[in-house]
Image 1 (cartoon, rainbow, N blue to C red):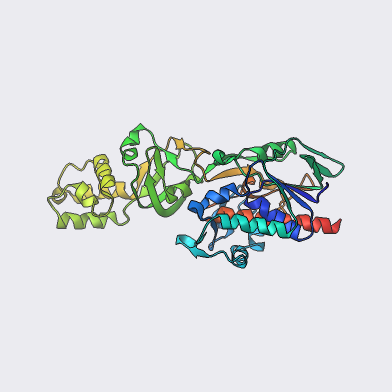
Image 2 (image 1 turned 90 degrees about the vertical axis):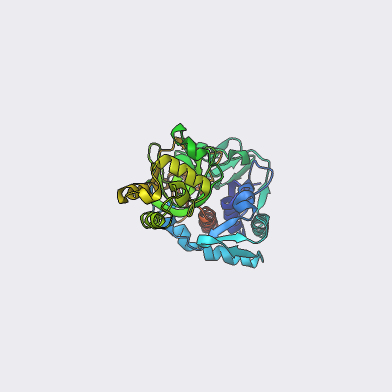
Length: 391
């Protein structure tokens, strides 16, 4: 059977594109090697799916072309997706920083997308390996099916245990689409032996302002047995390059707080003063690094300024990241210069589209990457429907 479109990938972007095109009258086939649709959706947000963010704007996304995402995001917004969520009577709640989650389970979002596909007559084939892709006579041929439109929605290689691969990049290479070098993003960072004292306090978390790669994020930082994690670290990891430092401001206003401690507790050691504001194990590790060799009451202003400097700019030199195995998403991917920002269609290959994580558009932590999946999927689905109508 021939189709109007074949979509490779039954994740968020692929299902959204399929539902959009199918409900507009296109005959759509979705192919995925996994045995279930939406596997990454199911594990997201602790199983509750952080499905979008109220603060979604194009400046919350990384790309070699920072303007590329504007078109799709503005034409299908977070509010549009929320309307869909509510139409399916999925209860939701807002957490910090505009993050929206299901009250119940991420399975509800997958069921919603599958229901939308069913409403458009979309055929979904799971446990199906695409195999070789051929093109000729205006058709793409995949797994025994043919269509004038082919959508790359296979994501990136992040979280390989969920079946993620670099298939999108292989397809891009086959059709001559350039890549921005892929790399793990929203990923924990590793520390070397020089920072072993901080690896030894694994499990300790505290609010912090993390800085790296010219950006700063204020959220929790988490010390792990391998290095650094937590929301603020995951955020800056997307901007970090090997060899760059990462710094944490653990105690804003530290200079004033230390002077107050000197007045109130002159016989105390530094670690006791720090433990008033920071977790005890972190206070001990910091005191060991700073090595203030006197009681608080005998510390000079210069001493306290030195301590404050460390607390507000605690600098690490990560040895790397924990890689794709722990990365929430992949940065880089199919170069946006090769795509139309309005339709997601390849400029040099009519009928070939790339959407979602396969593309060099990467959002912040907190629902932004799902919104990109929805928005880019709708853009491609609408373009396929319009192309079919024009034919």
